[in-house]
Amino acid sequence: MKKKILIVDDNRLLRKFLSTHLERAGHEVRTAEDGFAALNVLSEFAPDVMFVDLFMPKIDGDRLCQIVRSRDDLKDCYLVILSAGIAETGKDYTKIGANACIAKGSFSNMAKNVIAAVNDSDTPAQNDEPGPIIGLDAVYSRQLTKELISRNQHLETILESMTEGFLEVFSERVVYANEAAVKMFEVSLENLLYAYPPDLFEDKAKKHIEKLITPQKKPVRNKNTPFDLHSRKVTIRSFPVEGESSTTIITLSDVTEQKRLEEKLQQAKKMEAVGTLAGGVAHDFNNLLMGIQGNISLMILDLTPGDPHFDEVASIERCVDSAAKLTKQLLGFARGGKYMVKATSLNDMIRKLKGMFERTNKHIFFHEKHQDDLWSVEVDQGQIEQVIMNLFLNACQAMLKKGELRVTSENVVLDQNFVKNFDVEPGNYVKISVGDTGYGMDPEVQQRIFEPFFTTKAVGEGTGMGLASAFGIVKNHNGIIECRSTRGKGSTFNVFLPASRQETSDPSGSQSKLHKGTETILLVDDEDIIISVDRKLLKQLGYKVLIAKSGVTAMKIFTARHQHIDLVLLDIIMPDMGGEEVYARMKNLKPDVKVLVSSGYSIDWQARKMIEDGCSGFIQKPFKMNQLAFEIREILTS
Image (cartoon, rainbow, N blue to C red; front, side):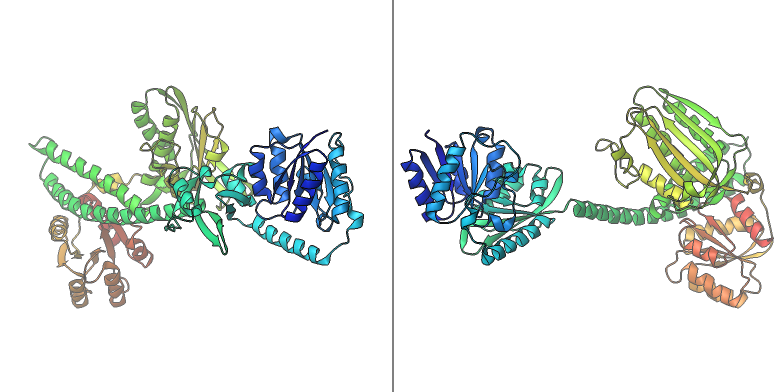
């Protein structure tokens, strides 16, 4: 029966001998010098039988057989391996889809074995076990062949273990691809081999690859420019093969994680720069607010609720309070950390914030459950309010129409088993839970919700900083924040803050009184407006005031009169000698010097180090007269 036969071998004499022998037997025969040429033939010729050499340049017999077996039109083709070295490899030829294997030997023996294989193709064996290699008994094992095969296997092992994608392109077709390349392109090896490389890419990358594989085009620059490849970012480089103008080696490096980290670093640097700017603006703005607040405090002394303009002056003071809160948020963004830490009742805080959200989210039903004897916590109230507001806001946004928001608080005791994964100490904690009936999250999203800049919201609807900042704040308070969520069933965030033994108190009552005195105070500040208003406030409180508009001047006055100075009201940021250096020098002269630090920055700036070094207290600008009076008396009478 006449057969259509394709012989693929890089030995020209062997191809000629076998094709002539088979044509004399009445068969239609085509030949190809390697796997690459064979794929050209197979585009228009569907053989019944293929004889394939195992070791060939370009696309070898192993991969050619895999490609043939992946094509529906060639699924019944009878594949026969022709190899002089397969015995040395120990390769199972059935694993690559071959039906039989003939060892290369003398032409006369091969002719007989090839005809027999063609006859066997009428009734191919069905078992999965490889049959014996036909003609192997007439072939001697060759040490040189073993060494060459071993060397080839070593090189292929290296290529297959590379994390970089590796393509060999011959005559604008892929003839080799390692495992990393297959994964990057997300296609099977069979579909990748013999592909036109530009077709594997899109847009700019397609044009880039066209230039790489076209010899007559100019060399391509910008080798480190990343291109999109499915969900990855890859850089593409090419290397010509010496003596083979039609062959190009292309390497693809997956730089997705590197680019992500670079973008995060750039974002972090940008945020740091913006933070520095925000901190400077907040500091300067607080100094201006101090001038307004100081004068308002003085004006209110001469007014009573029934006087003309009292309401207007009180309204200005409320505006100053709002502006001061805004600058505090700016400083929080700029510096991080805890500011004014004090024992706090979380139940009171939650009820206040819940009331605010109820008024603006009428489609949400709020459910509360609070433990009455809730322990106090030592926190920065502004920052913990920010955490709870972020949790409320996220919950409300997760429920676009109607929904229920559950908020609870309770005392809990966390043991070692619970806290071991959170790097906190076991003990008494106050637990706050905020749960919603929104759309929930899948596990992949849950793993990333606390990452900076990660958001599932559309562009322009979220920065991805809310939960990241909440995580940082809770962590900075030695607490725990965790999330439990199921897709379609809502989310619950749990916050654990260390309990405190201190009683919550409201110092506003004691601060509302004007505590006066007669001691001598050295006022040190480089801002004229601050000097002017603080001097008036201190004189109104009965104190004797010495003025220094710089650190250098302050040291001259303090050196001459430190025995008679009872307290120093000291600014931190000054051009010639900063407050930190001024304090250190004063302490050398008078170890028990009492210093109240005053700054437009927060206590987590240079003031914290000064407090740790022995400064008596800190007051943040802008402050009211009663606050200043209270702080001074607290220090002088301690």
